[in-house]
Image 1 (cartoon, rainbow, N blue to C red):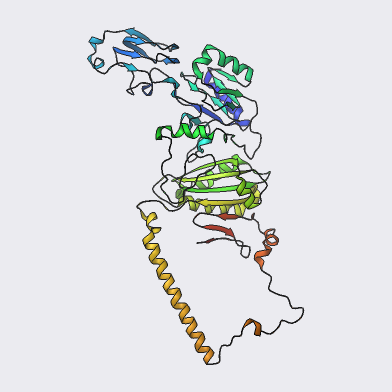
Image 2 (cartoon, rainbow, N blue to C red):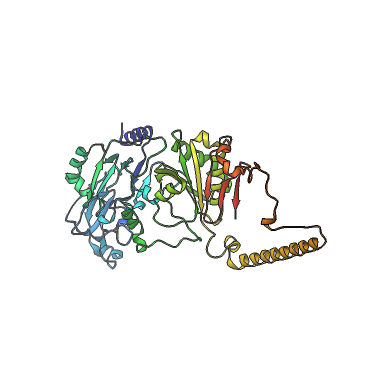
Length: 463
């Protein structure tokens, strides 16, 4: 069986154990333009320089004619079939005489904790992962390219990186002993460096409701690597009252639906349901969704009275010019849970929605201060006129003897044994909830609040 066949069989075994797999993306190939200072491979007759104080493994796929080469401190060239180097006088190729030497970029620039450097094996159109989960989680299988050279930095200061397994150079490491031997070898030292440690364990995620990624402690390192090109600062979100989901480095615009669940909940089945039954609809084509199990914030547990320390987080992000779709989809998911929550194993749901877009456009205009102030002023004036008219009418009726009122202390005493007050069904929602087909929802938003009315069993919204 060839290498692609072995990888395919290994990925199928991963799927059976509910393990996700992450692919390392960058490489240190000679023929990759991104690895050179001018974003192009050396032209014929060029002088080639590698960082003198670095270690690197470089795969060469083609033949190259060069005039001179400065080699690194320690390294290797892996020559593909037909690849090699030949000497060529620089004077015969004037294009290379004025551009200076071709400099190979720092191979140590690639860090394990950079979310941009990983690709998920179960990626699908419309799905994404929060920043912390883009980096391999503790129960993930990691695959390094078998047809490319690479170098990975483990650190600095991030401690031990733990994953389920590591596949590199055609070998799969599932025990710390075998992995340690590989990392200590010359091949391992050329590909892995830094003060951090890499560890593997055979534990896959055996919980059908999903497993927490386990990156809470290293998320500062993940965010630092992600934001390094931006000077370490998050870009400003293009909406009012933006949201920051658990595991995300920066604020975003959209909506978050949080679910508590029972033992029957299946994360993969629910993600597939959202993808095919909702996200595939034409009205939601401009949205992206992330679904995962995350730690539940202590303040939210105290506020809701829930005992679970985890929850299912559904993040909805708008990627197109249209706005409002994330909020509509969040409400559609709540309605779906109200109808099918028991069958899905969902116990309760809450939702949050970001505010209106910032800047021009129709969506921002609807929430601009000017029009809203004018509308509020008109409503206040109409309400004041109505109250004045009501008061005037009451005075006229009293003078005509058609309306009478008395102070509280003049009211007739209630008969002995008569019940005080009335039976308010709002305070007996627990009794009515058993008769509802859907779990009780407690939904709130920064701009709106959503709830289930126990009198009518429907979700209503308050402005």
